[in-house]
Length: 461
Image (tube, rainbow, N blue to C red; front, top):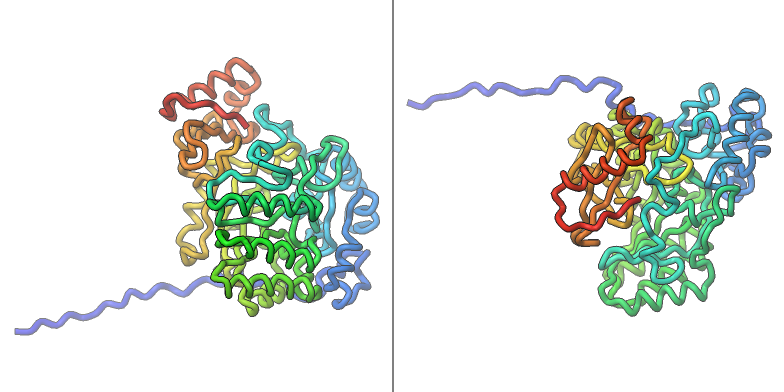
């Protein structure tokens, strides 16, 4: 006798409309609500040269631009914030137009680029200017060789905008009242020295070209650097790194020569059997508009693979829902989410950092939201030069006192690397312990001991 079974359908319920929020990009001439841009037509706003010329660099320029949409109290707060900031300020009209000026204090884009004195918190006592110890891993100016098969080439020290949280605030942009910048490899002679070093190290296969920001390289220099590196036989991968698509996407639309130069290097690399890709840096879902989508479509049509590296920033993307929205929105415009970094321990931006626990919780929520190749890995770039570690791969995490201990056996064996949560995010008793030097040292030593790392040398940020 043959048995038959009725099939029970397991149909999922309809998806609620809010699940499609990632497709809802800002449209139209949204910049016209800023008085300074009220009469700016689309062709002008999309002109990358106009964007560069009109970028805000001083408190006075900011006031002139946003006069009528911000309060005098906000302006005074920003003016003092400019004075105290370790990074120079430079903000594109595109970014200014995306700020919600009805609530600039809490706006995620304002938080990234315009400092407010009233929001500043004391730096963590274990913080240093070059927390990742890049200078200690630099065999010559403008080159960082930390990992065995990868090096970071820094051919310039300028950017289309200056992020307040920049891990290279020790070198990027002009000097400020608080920081005298060191010199990177900014001349063609220094570039040739870097190329010679790379050519002399056959273990190197992967070069990241950053800075600064390759958006600011002239097309001829994109080709010069790209071709020089492609000519080195043992190199297999090049990554051009830029914040540009997030804060000035129109450059990809209107600076045809720059895009053609990058395309030529990508195409030559492909013919050589070598990978050339673009790495970019979106942090907030609001940074992605119809202009962004149009720009990213140009990259996609030209076969330029684009990955994104975000930073986990308090008040910008540090909730489950906002990181999920950012991840989905990036996939929607053909940008692959690659990394979400713990905010590096850099000077003057303690109010932007968040905790290891927040990162672990957020990653758990985001994973499963979309395909694995469109899901970012959350990492901690271990202070002291340990390199990128999966954020949850700590050897020990003292959540109460905010101390995470990482090991990096393939990067710097025999060492322990510490990341410290922002003190204001800890409980009152833990905050009191950090104010006592002797107790703080004891907490750190106990964390190392609990990590079970025998005979390790302690490397502090």
